[in-house]
Image: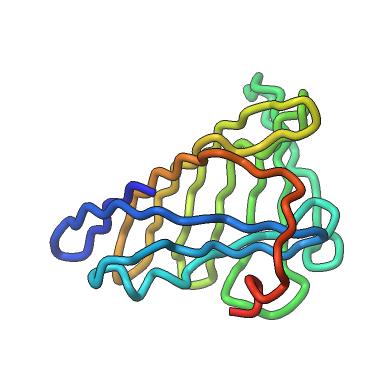
Length: 164
């Protein structure tokens, strides 16, 4: 991850991490090391789960497209079923391969996270190749670019990875 965090000064950070996923919806991001200035962000990771688990956790609806929108992309609105500080997520999906290409996380306090994602398409999977995220919170702003490296598909992952 290459990150630039802005509070009253801009701090460039470079982080390495491993992202673990196990069906149906276990996800964990584990950083190799975290600079002292970024310690408060090391456990910050949000996930909407997988499309298979969305109906359990969210009210899901298709956003109507504007007549001027010629992109052909689908936008889903996910509203949490349980009370939280998250108001909703807009999930933009490419209908050609059903890969997520954008996310807008909108919080009740006016905070937001905007994510754009490019994917690589393999024989059986559509996987993230790069994500760019802009965090807009009252106390800080951050611009993060995450480049996904080598994937190990269906590798065994111990459940202890997800207990944190």
